Image 1 (cartoon, helix red, strand yellow):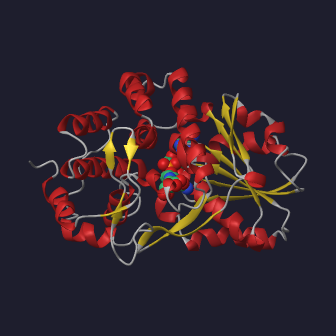
Image 2 (cartoon, helix red, strand yellow):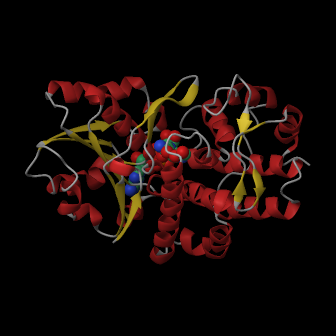
Image 3 (tube, protein in one colour):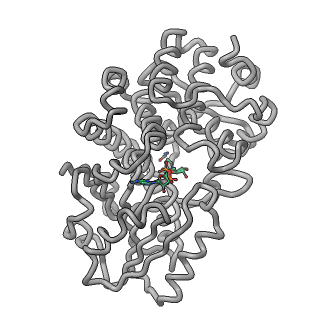
Length: 360
Ligand code: NAD
Ligand code: GLY
């Protein structure tokens, strides 16, 4: 097992990465602070892994909430089910919430923990590659609103992250690829050597080679933990993690939540950001081609859906947490391995990208 730290003073916490961690009771129990434990999962993950988790918690009084599976259920309405169970069970402020699932369950569980009695302890057990390399680390929690993705939420850090690589065995190839989109992001924004390693090792990752996957998870978590330790609440550097996300969120919202996987939308968004970075004169054709080729090798989409025209894109992109005074701001690439902070977008260049990318 590897243990990394997210260094946040007295709110610092470990990320445990390794095989067989789900069955290691002592890893969980050292982070649980009272008898009352609530486990949040969904209808797909619970039959696979809930019993394994509950086996470690026999000394505790445990409640479970099993939500329907899907991004379209990441809403205030379904969040209420967690509060209902906590209140009906008379859980107090020293209760602990465990989120067992992908990014949807992690974001919802974390937000419920942040809100219930103004904050209870929570543990992240991420079960998708995307959640292990990104969403479980760093304390961004929340739900979607019909008008905007992740627009209701809070920064709230977990007590630990338990990333058991064995759970990825049951993940389908499409979900694995979606997770790789966020892995590639770290290479693009701050780690050119990691990007080159990904180019060399993408076939091994797609073939689920355990050593390659373990390295990719660890490098991603190292990068994420460093960024979060420097800028927990996204006043600057952390925004670089949103490379491609403004376009991506517009695609997710515009196409209907659940149509594109988050990682798929991010892959398309990153290609659009790369195209815009080329129009800015920062990337050259060869850089853009390296980026699109790597996503293509992962079988990730690289072109936006035709149903979202450029006007609709701009409308959707105007609902984004990075925007200031209604001005769209984006993360772009100055080179492979280096990103800008959010910059005001040149509307003319943005429209060129939205109208011409993939058609020239
Ligand atoms: P997800 O949570 O919807 O999980 C993807 C699918 O895989 C679901 O159907 C799920 O039931 C299934 N699944 C999960 N683990 C499985 C396993 N081990 N075996 C088989 N099936 C499994 O999606 P995701 O890609 O994990 O996360 C996307 C969400 O994360 C989005 O809502 C996004 O906004 C959010 N996100 C948050 C952050 C953050 O910093 N908080 C970062 C990135 C993404
Ligand atoms: N996934 C973006 C962030 O954690 O900031």
